[in-house]
Image (cartoon, rainbow over all chains, first blue to last red; front, top):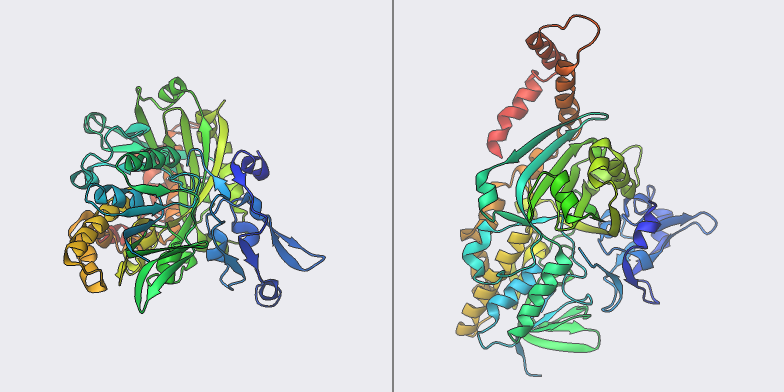
Length: 92
Length: 429
């Protein structure tokens, strides 16, 4: 089962605005390894070569915060989605 | 604006336990939960040990929707292509409610409903954005457009605790002090679970895995049987994940784990019905946040109360106990009419008298001890290897078993000074 199929099992309510903001200036200048691309359990971060930027599909966020901790350069500004939005676990 | 008595940020187990202890005391208590209902943002492995909290909880968990009573404890060392298990059961486990598997969306929601029956306001879909300050004292919270002034705020907002951070009580989160747990809930009939795990109705199994499951990284796998689902997952140190070469996409670890022979048969025919992830404090005693300030207390995961003891992992009973002790501190502070840091400091003093800080203190050297590749590569590789050597009967006459074992122990380096030093050091943990 692919990770996007797994995410599709969960109940999400997506806000229009992302709760994760990426400062790509930092990604471009200071961050060599881009941990976010492989530490995220939802595999939501991708690198867009054309625009030389990191993008996140915030709507599938499991709200664990791993990316926030792993982004040691401080490019990821992360807060919880507003009340009513984000993932809603039925089992947990 | 008139102040209410207590605002609790977060409807997890510590926040709800705090509110439960405060109820029936003629206090105005509000619990704010950002999810649709308490539990909807929460994830556990997991299991809850009841004995440590029994003296504190009164009737709080009477009738609680616990999943199964754990009567079988298993540990596996996974090599690349073999494994070795320990399987423990005992009458004492079977006859007492020692520990139970739980699902948080069920348990936390149930507890919040009990609270509402007691007249506590549990308000869902409210994300708390900021603290209100009066000079250098916390004086309530801000949620969206709304301000709720309060005499005391309880930061029960989980491992990422933005409240403790805003209050300046929480140290910066470093990758080496946290792990990420990734879990699937797999649906399987009650009968199948009983059969496959060799347990009776309502009895359950807790199983931890070490070795190949994390490809040598700090962490392990876990499997807990619930009533008619299985919680299957992995935990990996965030620093270990960041530093691994070549890099591994975290989510693939769980797929590889599920594909292993040892797991495949256990979950066969089961449908995955939920996918979740959650960060876990792993730093132990030395990375606990400051626990109180003027007008604020920090409880549960927010404070860093979680304990990896190698053979088991604990968190929820620390959350419940710290929530209750926070409540008792608040009741005392209210009598004095003083919520200053000085008065609230008795929260920490009380925690030091209970298992919460005693157990964490006792295990303070554990994170350093466990930060050793040998536990995730060397031992899980060689213990199954020894068994394979001894138990293999080839086309040649069988060598004396003791001789085989002795040679393998020597050639694997198990008798080296380094290994003996490791063995010697277990007295410190």
